Each structure stands twice: as C-alpha cells, then as structure tokens.
Image 1 (cartoon, one colour):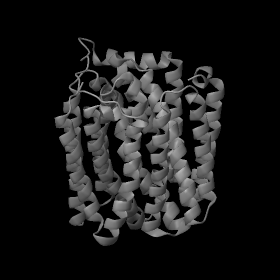
Image 2 (cartoon, one colour; image 1 turned 45 degrees about the vertical axis):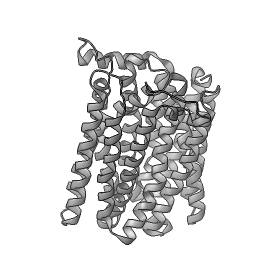
Image 3 (cartoon, helix red, strand yellow; image 1 turned 180 degrees about the horizontal axis):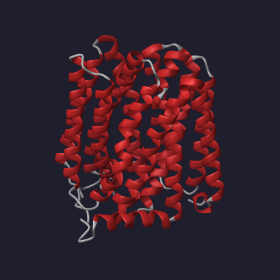
Image 4 (cartoon, one colour; image 1 turned 60 degrees about the vertical axis):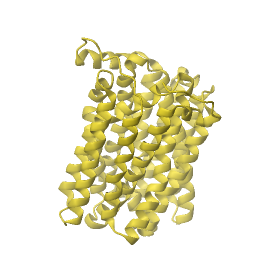
Length: 406
C-alpha cells in the first residue's frame, strides 16, 4: 500500500494514492456514462414514444448482472482483479463507440439499443463486484466508510454533471456527441488502472467455483445483519430507482418541460445525492446507523411522493433534491455495513451477492413499472412504489434488533 497522509473528515480515504487515482478515473468515466444515459433515454422517449421501451432498456442493461454477478464475485476472489477491470472497460468503450456509430449512420433502432445494453451489462457483471472489492482494499479498515461514501459521491457528482453536459450537447451539437463523450471517458479509468497497485486476491486454492459460490451464499444467509441488508438492497432498488428511469415521462408528459426540464430534474436528484454522500462520509463509523438508515428510506419515500404530486418544475426539483439526499444516505450506509461484515477472503462474493440484490432490483422494478405506467400514469406508479418502500423499510427495521443496534 502506498504512503498516506492524514486528511480531515470524510476525505480520509483520499490519503491513499491508489484510491485517489481510481476515484478520479471512475468519476470521469461515470460523467461520460450519465451523459450517454440521459441522451439515450431522451432519444427512446421521443423516437419510440411508448414508455415501456424505457423499462425494456433498463431491464436489458441489468439482466446480465442478475444472471452473472455471482460468478463475477467469485472471479474477483480468484482472479487477477486488474485484468478483469481493464478488459471490462475496453469492452464497454467499444460498445459506446458502436452505439454512436450506429446513431450517426442512421441504423440505431430498438434491437441495437437493447443488444448493446445486454453486452454492456455482461461486461459490468464481471467488473462491478471486482471494483467494489478493490476500492475497499485500497484503504485501511477505519477508512472503509469514507471510501464507500466517497465512491457514492463520485457516482452522484457525475449524476449531477453528466445531465448538464448532455443537455448542452443535445441543444448545441446533437445526440451523437453524447455517445462520443462516453466512449472517450473510459480512457480515464483505463489509465488509472494501469497506474495503481492492486493486491492479488486469495485465488481460491483448489476450491471449485461451485463450492466457492456456496461459501459466500452460506455466509450471507447465516449472518443476520447481512441477510437483512441484502433484503433492503433488493427492495430499495426495486421500488426507488424506477423514479430515474421514468423521469423523461415526468418531464415530457406531466410537467411538459422537455429535454431541459428532464436534465434539471435528474441534476436536482444528483445534487441532493452529492450532499447525502458528503454527509454520510463526514459522519463516518458512528453508532445508530441502523436508525439513520430506516429514517432515510422513509424520508426518501415521502419526498418522492411529494414530487409525484407536484405539477410545478421548481417544487419537483426541490423535492427530488431531497429524495436524492435521503436515498444516497440510505444506500451508503447499507453498502458500508455490508463491507464491514464481509471477511476479506469472502469480500468479492459477499459484495457480489449484495450487488445482485441492489442492481437486480433496478431492472425488475423498471420492467414492472413500465407495464403499469401506460394505464395508470408515471406519478401514480412511482408514488405507489415510494409508499410501499416506506412500509417495507419500517417493517424490516422493526423486526431486526441487530439492525437497530448497528
């Protein structure tokens, strides 16, 4: 591990040179990904009209994660992690470039969008658990909360910046440039991966892949706190993240503020998420995180309900800012508690199980919401999902004494 110097508060993980470099590379890449995501969602909404296609695209992107993330977690504990991450980034860069080329040549249809989403998801199913295992291995144990929260910060900072870049490019240069920005952004994380030191995993000895996976699943099942956290991750992502998938519908059909309004709504959510990540990191490892976790989920649900009732752009932006704050607070705490309860030799597998629950809930929620938005409308569906999340979170919290003491 490289030398470190003391840094104040939530910046503690930045004392590690390796963590700093990977954070910067991941941040720049995430900005590109959000730039493309906003442009692609708006393209789907305006070109194909049917809101179900937004759900189809989200499901196609996340389906490979549901199918193969557990294998990715086992690989992270047995294989050269740098190689996994580098290969994944190169593949994702090529898929983004292909998307842009198809758009420029006029051949970008639904089939191509869904096909490239599946291929990107396949690459991410191997890199996502590896990345999560790597970021916490780059810092000492007392800095895990800081590392997780700062990682959430880079993701949500990019969520605020990416839509602004997308809006500017959509208005001035065209959709194709959004795809080009994403393809180029992968170079940042590729360079970072070449320059940092990544410790080799325990490589699993002669244990079979099946036994390796079983060991991770058994540990999560037998650890009560981990089991509850995984359930919360699945329910939270299923019920919360369809909000982001169907924001184009809210902006275009409900508020009638167009692409600029969509970008403003998404950026407002991102700004709240940034503040939430900073606050969570600043608090660090403190008692009572279980209570904070439950309160954050409940307040997220209430803020989102208010945003779905609102018919004013400014009010909706303020409420989505609050929703982003509370949702990131909740999931940052969930992620930190998972990392803290994962032994080093099982970290890749435990993180992949959590990632399967978290990432797997997103496409399923978006797919279900996609079928309901047509007959019932986006505000009613997203509002109902948010209310259900409030009930489920409070119920799990009430039934888990260990979570209340976390």
